[in-house]
Structures are given as structure tokens and as C-alpha cells.
Image 1 (tube, rainbow, N blue to C red):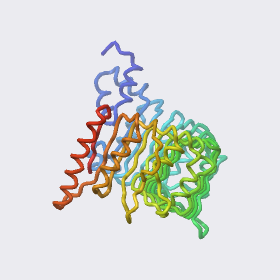
Image 2: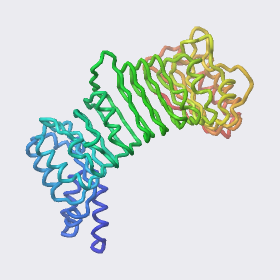
Image 3: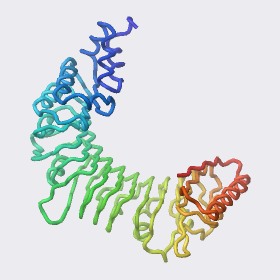
Image 4: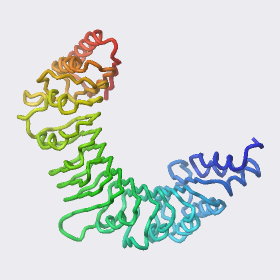
Length: 419
């Protein structure tokens, strides 16, 4: 160990998860202490990593963190996540950021302070590439002064910000590629809650727990879009057909428009969602490059239209991964078995039920016949704690039928996942 270069020791210390472990390890010897002071590039303080953080008063904790940070030089990554450790003094937190800002590339910040600390004013015009801010307020964004020329990833979680400031913040990040918005408190001046965002470089966006009347996103480079647990009246994506990954999970939206961006879609994942199939199908039907389609716990408003495997097979010839959740409502089966076209390229099949009945095993069998090159099938099921004798019999019958069925498909791997 004594022959290890001090730079290598600094790299080893930087891979430890918590600052407490770094400090303890640096006490090994004089050489490790030097590595901590001169060659440590990542440091993380997290109140969830060490329960004793919550037992220390905020004043003492400020002293410990200050001493730890101020003994380093050249930190590139700093994580301070102290949401359970009480309220910190703003001047102390500002001192941490001022000391490290010139070398920082990654900052993960969740520190309750009084008064609020203006992260943008302190860290703007520096070399930050990743910025994650939680439980904070952002006001008065000035793109010309608070500019982030190198920022590629921005995450705002439980942040209070106005729609205008959010738009200006994206303008201040000319190289931004990834944006995360989690449960933001968006201040709106007009009666209509509207957010319009524009970024020519944005490639990935994740939005969770947001409620708006209208959300318009304009970007020429978008590749990944994930909406989760949102309530939107209108969502519109304006782009140039670069979208490859589209996921929507537990979202309420009246008008969804991504039609101009879907030509190169490879993954569509829809779950816990109510849609009009004809309208949704019109949006994704041009996605001839689609490789994964997941429709799970989806409610269709237009029952008379129906969705059949023939449509899926014809429109998405390159499909390799298909996930469908079986449902029978009012005598109509979602994902019907009409037509004769095979899903030639499907190698992974995920099938599930919310309420099992005698038709499910027949449905599984017909799907297997339509996938001649299948390699793996995963069956998902929901089993309640209290089951009647009849329900137990149906489950036993289904299990027996699947065992018999899979003897015909010995080359296919079978996996069951119940919850």
C-alpha cells in the first residue's frame, strides 16, 4: 500500500460513499491524509447515510462540514443532502459553495437554509456540468449574468420557481441535454397555468408530479420523454422527429400531441393511462422502427375500435419486445386475436392480468403461436391476500394449463412474477 501513488489513493477515497468514511480512511497515515487534502475529487454528505447526523445540532454539523470541505482542494463533485438535519445558516452554506465553485463539475444540493441561498448567483458562470437542486426557491433568473455555459444535466425537485424563471433558466444553459422536474411548485401570474420551455440541445426530459393547464416543450434534439404522475390538460411536444423513447405512467392528459416527433420512436411504454386508441394510434403508427411496445393497465375510451395483434404486427414490423396486460371489459377483449400476421421479430413477451379468468391461458397460447422466434415469456399476475375457493381453482387451472402449454415450447424461457 505504501507504494501506491498519492493520486491513486485520492481516487480511492473519492469512491467512498460518505464524507464520514473519507475522513476515517484519511486517518490511516500521513500519505492518505495528503491524498485527502490534495487529490480528493468527490465528497458527499447525506443525512440518510449516517443516522447520527440527525442527532447533531445544525450548528455543530455546519462546523464539521466546513472543516471537512475546507481541508480539500480541487473538489469536482460535491453532494450535500441534509433534508432531515434541521435548518442551516445561509452564510455558512454560501461559504461552502464559494470555496468550491471554481473547480466543481457536479453539485447535488438539498440544504434547508434561512434565508434562502441563491444557487444560481453563486455557481453561475462556472464549470458546472451537473446541477441537482431540491427543496429550494429559485427567483429572478437573469440569463446574461447567471449563465451556465457547461451545464449538461439539470434536476429540480420540490423547487419553487415561476414559469418565466424556469424558461429563462433553460435559456441560460446553452448545452443542456437532460432535464428533471419533480413536483415543482410553479408560480403563475395568469389565470391559466401554462409552461412553455424551449431548448435546442435538450435530449432527455423527465417530469413527475406536475399539474398544469398547458405544457409546451420545444426542442430539436429530444430523444427521451418520460411523464409520470402528472395532471395536464394539454401537453405538446414540438420537435424534428428525433424522439426514440416515450414513457407515460399514471398521467391524466386531455390533449396529448407528440405526432411530429415520432418517426424514429424505438420504445413506447404506456401504463396506468386512459386514452382514445384511435387518436393515440394515429400518433405512433408512423413509428416503423419501434422495437418495444408496452401497454399496461391502460383504459381505452373507444371500446368499439378495439386493438388487435394484426394492427401491431403490420405497423411495427421491427418489434422485438411486447408487453400487454390482459383485460376483459363488457365482453370485449383488449388486444384481440384477429388477423393472421405473425410478430416475426418478437423475442421477449410480457403478459399480465389484473383479474384472472379462464380466457387468459387461451390468450397466452394464441400469442405464443404468433411469435415464432420467441425466446422468453414473463407472466405477471396480481394475487389478493384473501381468495375464494373459486379464485384458487382458476389460478390452479391456469398454472396447469401453462405447464402443459410450455411443453410445446421447450426453447422458450418462462418466468412468473406475482404481486
